[in-house]
Length: 271
Image 1 (cartoon, rainbow, N blue to C red):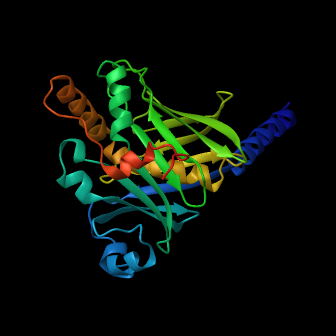
Image 2 (cartoon, rainbow, N blue to C red; image 1 turned 45 degrees about the horizontal axis):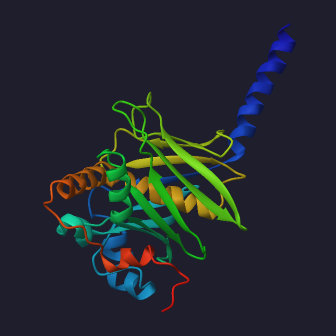
Image 3 (cartoon, helix red, strand yellow; image 1 turned 120 degrees about the horizontal axis):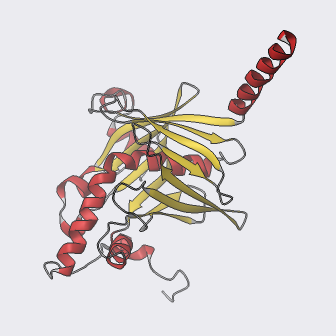
C-alpha cells in the first residue's frame, strides 16, 4: 500500500509539472511613477520616436512585459488624448512595443462602437476596443459583454483569424479572486489560461498563463494590451456611460475623430 501510495503521489506531481510545462507565462507590470529606466536614460523619448513613428510625442511609457525574467515588451498610452481631452474627444490609445521599441500593436477605445452598444444596452456601459497587431491583417475587436448585472462577473470576448480560420475567446472575471483576475476560455468553453492580477501593487501587475497550443504571438500581444487596459478599465466605463447619458439628454452632439471614423469605413469603397 505504501509503495502504491508513493507511486500515486509521484504520478500526481508529474501530472502537475507536465501541465505547467504545457503553458506559457508572461508578466505585465505597470509602474506607479515615471521613474523607470525606459524614460530616464536607457530609451529616451527622442530615441524611441526615431525607432518607431508609432511612438508619438504625447506617449507615456507606463510598464513592461517580462517573459522568463527578461523584458520582452514596453507598454505606453497617449497621455494627452486621455488626460487632457473631454467629451467625444477623450480617447484611450494603448500601444505595445518590443524591448527595442519596435511597434507590436495598438489598442483603441472605439467611442462610436461603445456608444452604440451602450445605447442598445439601455445605458449599461459596454466598452469596445480595436486591436491592430503588427504583421496581422485582421483588426481584432475586443468587447465587454452587454449581458452584465450588478455583482455579476465582467466578461469580454474577441476572436483571432489564423489562416482564415477564426479562434473565439472569452475572458471572464473570477468573482472569488481578490485582484483583477480573469479566466480565458476557448470556443469549446474550456479554460485555457488565467490572468492573475496582483492585489498589493500600486501600478498594477498581471501574471498570465496560457496553454501552449494557443499561446502564439497574436494571442499574447492581445492579452498584454488587455492587461494594460485594466489600469483604465473603470474610468473608460464611466466615460462611456457619461457620454451616453449626455447624448440622451441632448447635452452633446455625437462626433467621431477622423482616425476612428476611418476604422468604420468600407475598405472596398472608391477613393
